[in-house]
Length: 616
Image (cartoon, rainbow, N blue to C red; front, side, top):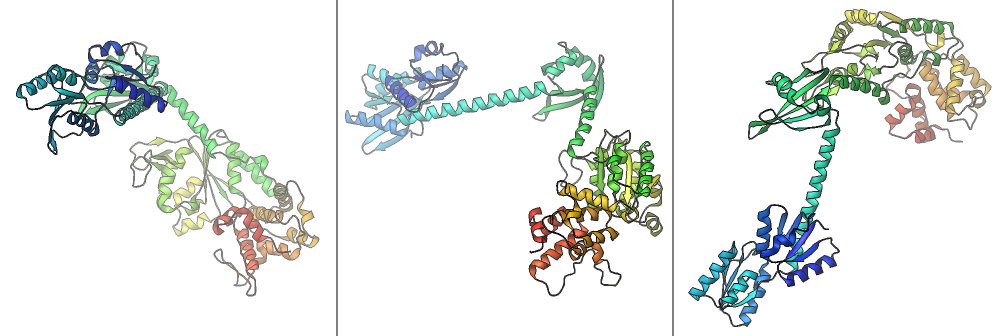
């Protein structure tokens, strides 16, 4: 049974409707009926939602209020066709009498040459009959065109008459409108079902209350907490929520809930209220889940002490000391030159501590613009400043709750941020930008720097009180040149990682090997790793001493004044463009990682190695 029913008032319209529906392959039922029995004829169609009807039948069905009614109209073309029939019968003064819901866009009075036409829309059968009787008494017209009722009564009154039919275009238009309404109904029903499914399955209780405080809607969680008896809302919950739109923790039986009341305003007047609540136990469980999910976002430590490769006594003693520090919650300051592995040591300390299963947040203080430091460190609430996220944002310290935050390059912090950091260390609490609430924190702080903080304190660029706060436990990582016996095993380790297990010694000449063994690695482990990666790109050719010297930053470390700074690139005067490209890439690789070089030059990793490789 179709959801749309077409009720034809004439056999002609019945025939047209069936033809159109068949031609368009539509699922619409069609019946022929009359005013007196239309309700009885429609009754068997129990699944019908929309009825297409005309004139009095449309009005009758509409008054029932059970269905959506689409009216079949009669266009000006249909009226003119009926008038033409009457003219051919000799009529010169014609009245168009029919239901007002059929006529569309037809003027009330007009002339067609010597033909006078008066259009009289009526709202009921009685009005149609009365109109025709009046016209008969006045003898003002000699022909009547109209609907079924008008045509039948005109015949009884002795008028020449004709029936105004609905054209195929009018019928098609009504069918299109019915289909559009049905589609909108289905979409609305789907939306309501989706909203209901969401409300019923969310982890929050929802109760809609009338003006008198009686529940008029509630979801499943509400029934779980309160059962079927909602008397507790009026007696226990509402009195404690009145006068506040904020959140409040209430106890209902043995269950603690966090409630939030939202007034519904209609015409500036509160008519109903919505109370949304969560079980406190569920909130705490969610908090644990959220913090665990931080690991999936990269907020975790990868390295362990067992991952640190070393044979040097100095480094082994440093690791032993770090293992002792990991057993405590005291702040740690890690000192060392660039590239000595300060972050790897911080990760190892975290993974050996009681916080190993909690977040590890790594922050490079030098990489955050000064104007963004406060919002990045401490977060903000909705509307805190122009451009802020609508939902607000957690700061890095908040993300590290119950875990460890690693502040690399701590010496780069501005003095104002140093002051706020000092408060975090002293009070173990933060406040987001624009928020009134203070959030307690349980974090361990590990800091690292390659700068002389004591000298910075003396110069006034680093707070003395902050220095003593972070310098509780101190580790100094030895540079690679002081880790005797570590450089070559580390080089072999990284080279094998880049080449699927091949040995670096087979890729270089004996003199090149000696040069590597004598090299003091001023860039430490970071430089060593970069050199191993560069060598891996030359694994199909033997690297000699001159090429190896070009790879090493020591070739540029001259004692005279022509030493280039970090912002300069030195090129020989007589060099080709390809050679210049290779030299630029070589010098950049000595200072930055391959990823950073690709980003600076705007090229891919493949292009980088293709341009860096010498021409054979």
